[in-house]
Length: 389
Image (tube, rainbow, N blue to C red; front, side, top):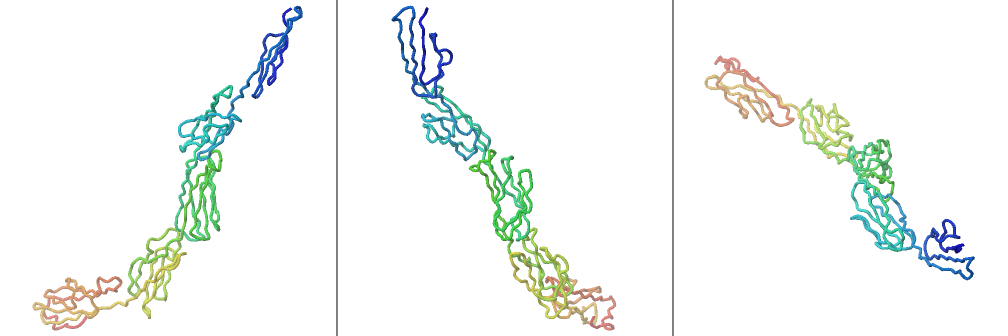
């Protein structure tokens, strides 16, 4: 009969039989010190017995614990237990500390979904080195386009957000007093907002693909009141019964403009509420008024309007012979412009024909009036018909 063996183990578990076998398999525990004890004897040979002890140092299994996904701007903590390791990774990845049982890992900003392999190394473990793969999602980059940057309180404004990340909804942050009238779009990226006070700022927010608040993209857009309007230069001394167009300088689309005339001297015929109106001016006493336009920011400076009554000219004729010259004289009220090109009150003509004079021909709103006279070829016409027409 052969020797009889008896095995015992501290710090582990014997896999299989522990007696009558010259070798055993041990599944060691989590780490630390272990011991193998073997005793033997030979029943046929008294005194042939004994035993031996083997002290075993059990190395722990290296395992990296921590998240396998994160977002740009969000550091993660990786840890292995109580024993320190050396942490390494691709360029741009930083560790704090580089050597330790745990470390804070920060990743570079690339703007795209990226994958990194992080490795822990230490001779204190039985299976060193070990690695973990971490997927890093980009931080959203947002922009906002408002339908207008100038409006009045109570007028809805449409905002459209655009993001570099096409998954995940947009969250809109409104200022005090603002109301969300509509919120639509595949990512809730379109918002119609109404304000009670201006100026105001709207912010769009979006979390990264893994919904981490530490990697939130934001964008803001501000809306203000329009500037106080101003009236563009136009005719300020119109004629009676003349229709004149008046416009706002650099009007803002969507803003209501309210026009006012201080007296009944004129009537707004078209355009009230818009940036352009037409006014029909009347003859009245007094013949002056002021024109203003207002929006939600206040009224414009007034423009003084003076309505002019037309001056109807007459032409007097003097002279006795067309060959020696006939003098045509306009009534007062110039400036003058004759059909001959002359700008004097009187002209002398030596040819028959029709002659006209225009009073105030060049001044805007000056009520220009035209008078004509025909000089026939008969040299005696002047004697027979000399008169004022």
